[in-house]
Image (cartoon, rainbow over all chains, first blue to last red):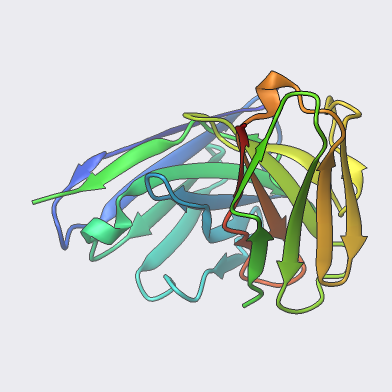
Length: 117
Length: 107
């Protein structure tokens, strides 16, 4: 059974950089796309970007200038950095897995990240 | 970017009734569209993939149809646990995009 666990800072000040990491347990890291998705409180879902095991990365153009996604395949982990955080970036951040040419089946529980001075 | 527009925003129905949710794409996504269900405090759950295929473990009362730009999620007879929010998502083009959601509420 695949499990994804996330950790990172949950309270940030404006202008700080968000750093989150997800670790994958019980399944292969290879052959999948690993995504970051966020959801502001009471709002819809926004795809941030994804990486696969070869290091190929796709970003949402709306966030591309501030986002870095990376991976450590030796640890079955992938990470998100989002710079210059503002209150508008307050959201639940999810990591999720999808096979190539498919959809998100496995998600972590999500982390509420709050940006406040 | 492909914009997905879901309608209605809110659907008020009674248990046992039929629910019909719509998702319209700003350009063709062929059949590369999925539907998710999200309950409060939980991550989304995949219901339908490639427009019309039920995901593993999803009850038969959920069905999907459509191709190109117009898609429908149908819940044939609403169970009390079905009153929540539903999202569509396309994988035809990057960036991957989600619709704004439809909330199915108890009338």
